[in-house]
Image: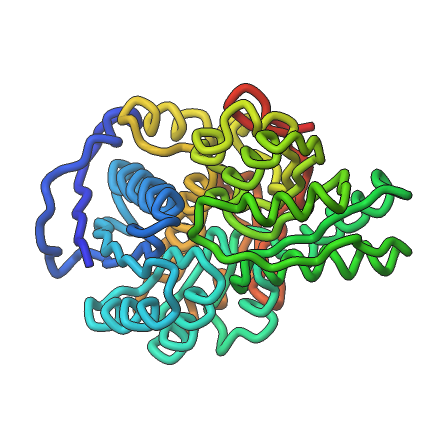
Length: 371
């Protein structure tokens, strides 16, 4: 793991994006963690998590820390592998971490949550959407900022049934917990609305050549493709659809909310639809944070602000009760309302946030905007 110490005194918010050299924590430091895929094919999301956590710590420390104590960050790389996530979680325990913003992939978040619950470490995932994460959480102190796949699937499945009535629809997934779970949930909603898919197909994540799969989509004459998976595969599939003359609409979920999708798909990505929690970039609290991140050439998109918000929630609860009593910290998170870059947020009895649900975004000209 990588330790980052962010001690900024009374610097301005914009200057807070410039971090000091890594040092060991003093006795007064509060050690928190950020964990996710810092390497591998999903590293773009790990960079978002790290960026959000670092900026939140910089800003909190610039404002005096938590009751005068400064935050120090431990960064863990799980590469979206559950067994590696468990190892990272145990390392966090050994480092004296009291809170973790993470993980990203569902399998990693769920696997690590057992370690955190047993150790009395608060976990808030900025990105895990699998309902199981909170429905079957191993103990109190496990939360999510992002929304749930069953909420995402309700919107997607209803849209597929209504907008493509009488047309051929394909359902694809990448065999991951996230991708398959989302695709199956959207399929179930669509089927319940009276529409049956023409094709249901799994594909292997990590490949670049999906020409065989696209040929099958073409032969079936599909007019909409719902894809449960990540931006890499979505980008390659959409580009190859265009190359083969298939004009079907690609519809997908929140894991395509990164500019890397466009860098892979190019202009072929235009018109791609995805469900995503309402973008907080227009929130007044978010604007100075975004400006600081952009000035430092750090990610400000995707799950960056969701990670920033996770650290904010922890910090606000910790200011109220301190960090020495896990039960008191959990009670503060369970009952509090927190002012974040995302707006006013609280957590329900499962640990899910009260953020508004998913809305539609459309890719155009290298960016995604509300539809």
